[in-house]
Image (cartoon, rainbow, N blue to C red; front, side, top):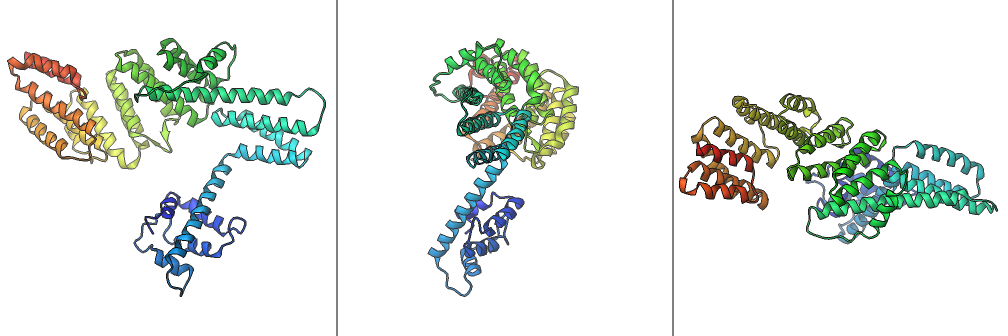
Length: 467
């Protein structure tokens, strides 16, 4: 039973959702099958983990039909019915989270039932709530839905006069379309930069031309327009305007929407930095810090250890060691518990390596628990570099050999990542042999080998071996 579709679904429920689901199943409005209530009660003994070996179909069947021989077909039907109830529960939960949409749907019913006082009161309250909400894509959709309900309500009243609600509905539909079109087009451009494929971006030229010709645009549409123009034209000018818009409006944008905006801007900066445009380092660092401070770059309640490490690398790139250390120590408590210690000590090791305090590097590397393969690979790379800078060549060569063997034997490492670090090990070993007849060839290999970790550092080692 533990490997069934039913249990796979129920395992995604947290403790609070499970309690609500039990109430849902017990409600005669949604379910009048007593057997499903009995099955749900039995499953409640194992919720929310459902990991016990005692959870079997036979025991579940016995709990629902005591004294009756096990019937696999009947049990299958019962489990399928409970899946359907679970799916309905999820849809109701999803709907109830969209508080504004619920009110708009009630308004539509008030209008249909000709309850004018109820309609007018709720319309006013809903409009006020919508106008005060931080903008996101949902708000544009709710605004259109509310305008459409108001237009239909006007038609039902059969009033022969100018209808402002119709114009409002058309305007709201236009804005919803513009926002959705920009977001889809941006994502297409973003994916094209990663995957070798071409999407058909229909009508986007007309949309961006129309929007660019308007004197005023809703802030969220303005932001996404400049994200699109930045990506489509690889434009520093439009990106500079985007940063200004983010600084001006980000405090009034809903967190999930703001996260998407920051990530598009961060990815744009990352591409520019890879092209050698170091002036974007300061910009992307500012975006990261802004998103961390307002928690829009948090995932649920935690800061990703990847985001944490990226910020540290940016500080170190600028040789801003004081702010790097302050950031490492200030935000380590915001990391997920399982990766917190590794992220803290790995980044401190990186910091002390840059500061040439190699004893501290070794101290922090020794405290890693390798919660992620990244720390396993990264720590060995830092340790190899530390041995080199400390002139402990014998230890370095021993570590190179063991690291190479680890890479070759570990089947869990992705082929591309494995090749990245194997190339690093091989080229460093060949560089340290310092064969005069092969020196130029090794330098060429360092410059052209793909993929390769620590290319700049390997070239530095090559230069030093010549001295």
